[in-house]
Image (cartoon, rainbow over all chains, first blue to last red):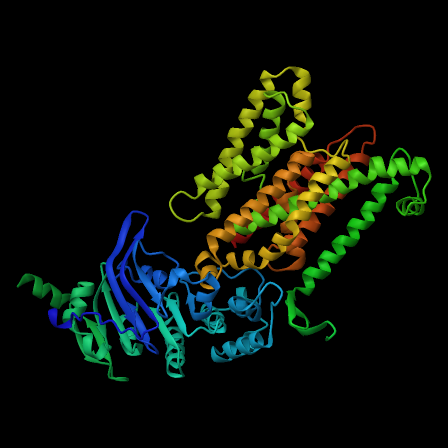
Length: 280
Length: 353
């Protein structure tokens, strides 16, 4: 267990860091003394059991939840000290649940992602056109542009929300469980897109994900959390071990190589073998 | 300088650019609003023509441009025009306030009368008149104070522990309305008959006896709020997509919502202070307009629809039984109540399907 416990290193160069965070919802303490470093240009995935504080951490990184103690540092400065729109030009967030307004078209929804770049009397520029077009293109939603969001399937809708986040053109992009409610094919589609975004240049993508195996496959940097603490972080190939999974999820498992990618694949132990272990 | 031009017109949103400036607009909303304005002008003309002293449209227009006879001038400037403008302004205020509250609560029922703010303003006025023995102006002050105190209390109770939820605002508002209603009943029972009759005007909206003073009060309120309302419209729209997303896009959610609530409360309280609680305009106007324009509720079209409803309602109130002074609240209650029933029916059908 101790061999997977890596101490979070502080790399002063990284754009997004959290230092000594204490996070609370009302009176309930979700995390204490949590420090984290998001490597630049990585596809960082945060995994952990339900209620381990991973979404809370993401919300706090996106300055939606001010920490009780400690600070989130964006580009070397406390995130709470930036004007709200300035943060929105550097860091985009796709929350778990968003509400599409009634009767809005895809193009108009995606265009809303341009808000941080606009002003009261300069509500639209050619930059906005370019960004929206690129975002639609990227997410394969160009042909949906004039459709109404209400009439799309779940997978299409998620791609549209992603397009909106992309239109924001932020170097940092945080996604909170972007694959929830999607079937496996659409999950892969969304994560492929995340991987492409990260590979295509200087964009850092942080994803909170439930699907452990998909996280291990796609992440360039994996962060495993339990009870408000980071248990391990690093390259999935190096850190995903049966011990880590048992520690994080209380789940016995074996780890095999993903036949497609060679990344670790978690295979939960069968019920019988667990029983056998319990009896012995 | 380049001439104004439509840069790109999509199906729902068009952009108008002039040099470095550009604004987004929705053609359908602009067309619908334009039609509402035309209807408003037509009914306004009818309102100015008709009454105990009938005038032709030509005479009305001549009088308005300063070429009327003395009697005509008296009728138009002292009686009909202030009443018409009061109706229009109160309607604008109610429609806008309804749009704001429905957007903030993300609920078509989230209008100021359901959230208790209207009742609060009424109760404030009734209490001022009956307990403190105030006259009309004091009653107006009481309405403003009552509206604000109620809004503050409802808001505070609804947002205990974290963010405010639209549904909680409505529930707390319903409770507040019931409480204030019983308070008003108690005050009326306790009062002498004549006083109670005077106070009663604060319980049913009416434009009877509207004069230039009322036009000034409500007109000034609207004039002061036009720029903040236009500036906050876009942010309100993003707030509808959820707090997290809005904040992610760079909106200061709490500040924006508080501003919206303050603007909505000022508009609603000013309307009640001017004409009493006119039922259902704030509830129905944004929803009717939403169906005409497509998309979500927006402030300016809702305000225009509010003005139209009130002008038509007041015309009906004056003309259906010309001998009685029917308060405008009664026809608007009919229009709005019918509409509300239809809305609820539609919603229950939609949720069953």
